[in-house]
Length: 245
Image 1 (cartoon, rainbow, N blue to C red):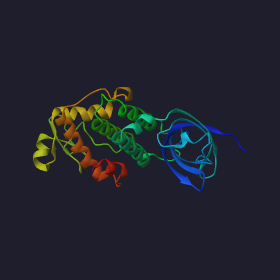
Image 2: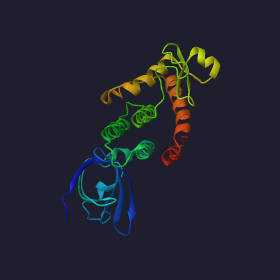
Image 3: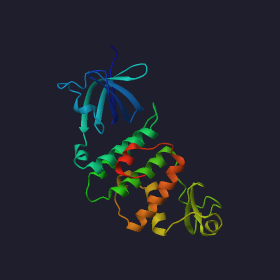
Image 4: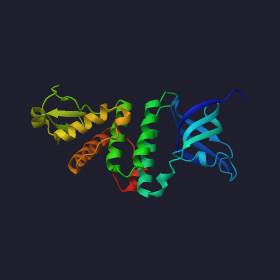
């Protein structure tokens, strides 16, 4: 056989294949989303048994095939087992994996997306954070990485950067006071606008470092729900399980 390669990433999904094997979708820093076949991973004595579950994060030693990869050895640094201790948190986590799978591209370097997913899963496990806010931060920052995020720094109608008082989902961003009067939209407070701008631009290590009021969170939720309903063409099963639409 040829030489193996080492990739760093996280298991997004796993499904059984045959009697003892698994088919994995893994988000890797170096090569984006890849398909990995783990032979014998479902055998009780397999060294790959625990490492081939969703959320497993670490280093993957693989043989590269024509259309997929074959698992050799995994060195897992974090299993995120804490997520299974609370069903609601687990569903948030699975939604994060689903959204990453939706936006990840094969054979394209995905370091930033992998890092975002990792720190967001860690934020879910910290009781100090409101998971509703963690979800919205993750969504907006994922839109930034995908290049599909709304313009929250100037009026998308006239270009003004002052007096941004509303959000128009179909036009893709903020409206100034004058354009809001003509076009309508969702009213946006200064605190809500600042929150959106911060999430878009903050360094990753400072992304989960703030709290917002209930009113601001509800406003951010409304904005992202409306925006994503227009620009994302998938229903996420994990959100349905959470009872969130």
